[in-house]
Image (cartoon, rainbow, N blue to C red; front, top):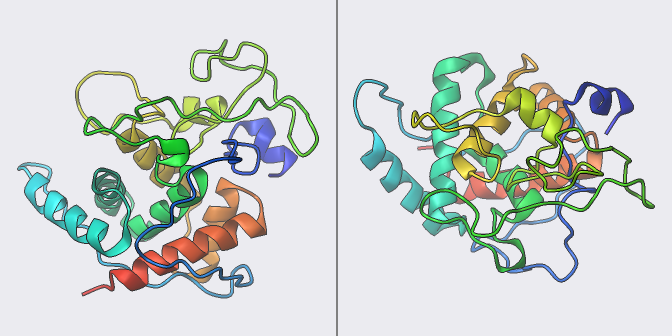
Length: 249
């Protein structure tokens, strides 16, 4: 991450986020080759599109059937696939020029928390992680950026240092700006809720004004999410594998 991104509160955390030692290393059903493309030279393949969003009537049955198909092909938990798909549906209406695919969100979710399953955790039917997903303290230890507490421990239960939170690993300051409630239940946005986290991540990725179906736009957005080429390559590997497992029809 660049210092400027951290200073403005717009950076997310990967390498300094969830502690991965001793974590759940189960591989997803689809093989994810370790690809190392150069930035802005290629874009992940085109995945099966999420259903059409129908704001004035229920589209839940279509989304559920789609999520079942995606989960069966990729190994992404079906409840999590539905959240990624819903975020694509919403952004298709809000910012159609962005052309965000759920597979990019899945690529990020795979890297950040293995879709909420790291260390034996899981996302429940209500969309929330069974155990809060909270990263290591950003206390300036070797290899870790120093970010003192910004939220009085409200999101990360740490009043000394900030920590990345939720299955998509938001910093508290980033969540403060981009957090969004994916359901109209009147509750506050929750970074531990996969629906809220996926929607916020989608809006963040699309906030840079690029076309994520192009190599330039995709890399610019993902590197804004985490300014590390290795991170972008890891996300690319997952997104491309998920897309190839669910080719656009």
